[in-house]
Length: 157
Image 1 (tube, rainbow, N blue to C red):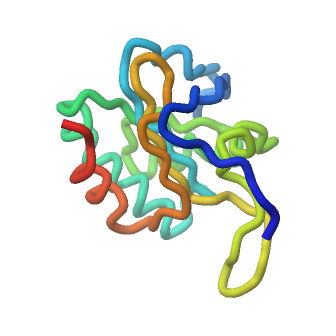
Image 2 (spheres, rainbow, N blue to C red; image 1 turned 135 degrees about the vertical axis):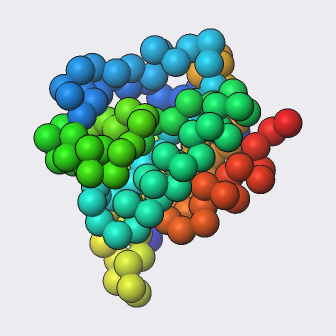
């Protein structure tokens, strides 16, 4: 596999401005001064991505009490994200990176193994970003199921 850029703790989180499910621009800079979980997922309304999104939804109170907000990013169009959010009662922003530029800058899009085949696609990834915009945790190739519970256990105290 080709070498891909990966983010590490201490790196400045790459800036972005993307449309949310309603088409409103949302920027990483909107979260300066607050801690945020930024997670990248392959496709809205698929079984694994639905499970992961619902796990984040069901954990927003626990994450908020630990001082974190949640933002999900996929290559889906805003209209698909709106339908996904409505169907699953998601209470955090879902952002559309249709051209995959942000996914690529965060190391969450590239060559990966899928059932033993090398393909280009979204690498399911989660990042913790501190109030100054620095990466404090970078997790690549996370599992859709059980990932949020693991994340909650590993949050800095």
